Amino acid sequence: MIIGVGVDSIEIARVAESVQNNPRLRQRLFTDGELKQLPQGGKEWSRLAALFAAKEAVFKTLGTGLSGHSWLQVETIHNQQGAPRVRLRGKAADTAARRGISRLHISLSHDRERAVAFCVAEGED
Image (cartoon, rainbow, N blue to C red):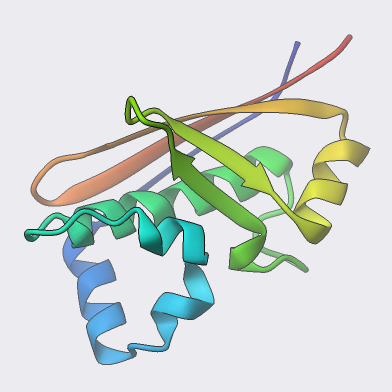
């Protein structure tokens, strides 16, 4: 059963500018696992933007927005085939459990200008 849906879209340049102007923002928004998987060769910004959009989409799916949560409580890791998977920690995991969410499905995409994430929360009847 679908419990929630969330989507977010963001300009890649906005993420790049924000992180370049405030380097500490990288550690406040993204987990070590997410940062370790960043591609090199100029694709870093599109991946960071997609990861940020994923966090926003997940919080919308939880029905809470960011309220009372931390960016680091949502982690998107890619498997060897490149498919993204979401891990929740702390209060975000508690919120998902309380809402009966047993699985999150996430899809990420980007072009030259924008990154987008779409998340579906699934649970039992």
